[in-house]
Image 1 (tube, rainbow, N blue to C red):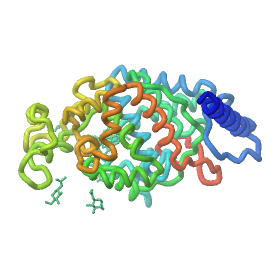
Image 2 (cartoon, rainbow, N blue to C red):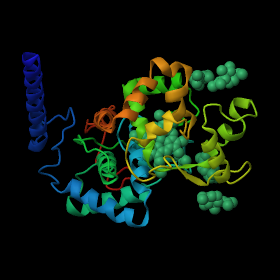
Image 3 (cartoon, rainbow, N blue to C red):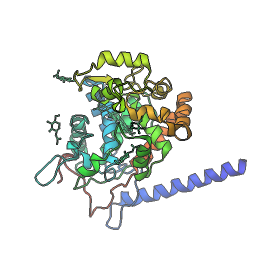
Length: 341
Ligand code: HEM
Ligand SMILES: *[C@@H]1O[C@H](CO)[C@@H](O)[C@H](O)[C@H]1NC(C)=O
Ligand SMILES: *[C@@H]1O[C@H](CO)[C@@H](O)[C@H](O)[C@H]1NC(C)=O
Ligand SMILES: *[C@@H]1O[C@H](CO)[C@@H](O)[C@H](O)[C@H]1NC(C)=O
Ligand SMILES: *[C@@H]1O[C@H](CO)[C@@H](O)[C@H](O)[C@H]1NC(C)=O
């Protein structure tokens, strides 16, 4: 046992050494520094205060918008699932080019773009042309979780920004009415597994959600004219007050009514009590398929915040690694996140 654990720490040390070597290539900034992977110290020399600068902008924004931390981590998710973490989500529509912002999962839903722009402006002032918008989203996601009481992690950096976006792929983002099978397939398609699906869904421990995403579960589940049987009756009664039939579908609710702004494991204890909001939330525990796949993982996280935090941090790094754009002949450092240079 002792020998296997020491050999695993040797492997870790070797991997760390390899990462440093990759980073040093970047530091060189010279012609031969073909960017390959991402690394934690990417801006160590070129923009040493990058983390602090983004953090400062987020803290300021949060003073007038308690929801902003949740909104920002969601932007990173919606960016990474569409042609990789490359800032493609942030581009505005221009002639011949329709923005991912217009896709169904984003339009009237994704928010926080102005705060990303403010972070970009602050970074451009301190170190012009250095920090990509894709990396701003990765930094903002981690900072948001930490400032909400959740775990920190090593934010790998060095992504470039795309010159294109892909609205068709954004239409196909994981949706609240996707069955467990399809959710799993969409995560697998970007290299994420069932554990990642359950852990990352735990981000629904904070933030807000519109009534229109729950009305079917309240009044007409799956065309039955009945409520969703997997919805806790007391929670249903509560939601009916907040989201009356025929009412304003844009009214906002807490994704986690127990601790609405805190990053904790309550998302999972809610699921155990059949108090998940979205169909895609509750089915992780209640779908017939879940008992041999996702439900045991939900149980584990409901029982241990430590297990959730450790897995979440690891899954965020994995999500941040989806198809990183590092080829300078394809990507760029945008000057403004909404426009290609
Ligand atoms: C598993 C598939 C997922 C589905 C189907 C899904 C769907 C949704 C929906 C429908 C909303 C409400 C949007 C609105 O009312 O306008 C939402 C909000 C949110 N999602 Fe997800 N989501 C998923 C995974 C994730 C992941 C992986 C993350 C981050 C790691 C995340 C973070 C959030 C956050 C923080 C909010 C609240 C945002 C705010 O208050 O502005 N979600 N999600
Ligand atoms: C986005 O939503 C707004 C308001 O709901 C709507 O008027 C607009 O047509 C939508 N845009 C697209 C491209 O669907
Ligand atoms: C999965 O997605 C396909 C294609 O959109 C759809 O036809 C099917 O009904 C979905 N199945 C589930 C279980 O969600
Ligand atoms: C929804 O209804 C269809 C058709 O009646 C049925 O095959 C399917 O299993 C139902 N889905 C759920 C989640 O109850
Ligand atoms: C519906 O709710 C949203 C969010 O609270 C609000 O901005 C909007 O004005 C409301 N619309 C109507 C018609 O009341």
